[in-house]
Length: 340
Ligand code: NAD
Image (cartoon, rainbow, N blue to C red; front, side):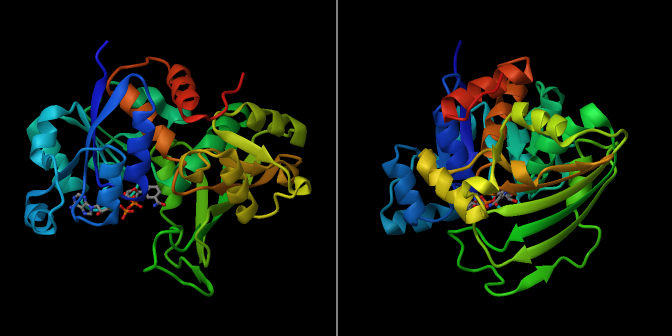
């Protein structure tokens, strides 16, 4: 079977990872990536063997800098089946029109609203909803994290109410513009948008979210309290997390006390860019009291959505009918442990 031809629009934090992840699969290939400026990331993309395409408005800058490019974005559209749009949030509407006119499929990221596509994607919760679709949206890093655990808990226990506080990283490691660099900043517009974003995939879930920006770049941390419809035990919940795809249990008593320790573990694992694709749950921080479940989870914002983008391509391009088959294939290629 011919490989699905993929273009990646926006080779930034998410785009460069998606391009690498797609390249690792045997049923899809990267035809090209786009860059707006001939900067070091462009040169690195070329060094890694990606063909770089540019918007019309960037042609002059590339020519002036003497940086070779393979063509314009419109040339790329003619060569691909699907564009994975990893541009900063809010460019989506413009690019959706272009993809539609070019007759290619498009995946957008969590910086865009659910309304842009009307379908949002998560491998654990709703793989089949994007089956054959022209457009879909992989939800944000935080929403992906919440869905990976809450969906399975809800399936088993029917959550009556979930209360989540998100301690957000202030900036990505390569970002020197955002902050705060000192202090904690509460999101005062309440409840935060994270709950409704989870509801774009689990509309029936009563979820309440608050968020605090913290002066860290490494990961987000979620504190979750879920009121369940029946009583259970800590051990039963841990068994669910042990079997959950792309969820990794760690223990504080093994020395994983902070997100810095998780990132050190990720470096030891030795994956591309030292990424931690799994949602990391502290095993000794999971506790059930009656029908109330408490836990903490860490989210590596730069990478948890990356395997989801690969699965979303498979669903939209009808490459694997069952979510579990796609997840297994993606995981194998990206060195993410499969369970069961
Ligand atoms: P980024 O700023 O790191 O990268 C965006 C890339 O798009 C850059 O290379 C930029 O040059 C390029 N770009 C800018 N304008 C463009 C245009 N008009 N046409 C083509 N390319 C253009 O952003 P990011 O963090 O990778 O975020 C991309 C999307 O992924 C957003 O929707 C964001 O909300 C979402 N997301 C980000 C994270 C994260 O933590 N960084 C996590 C999950 C989802």
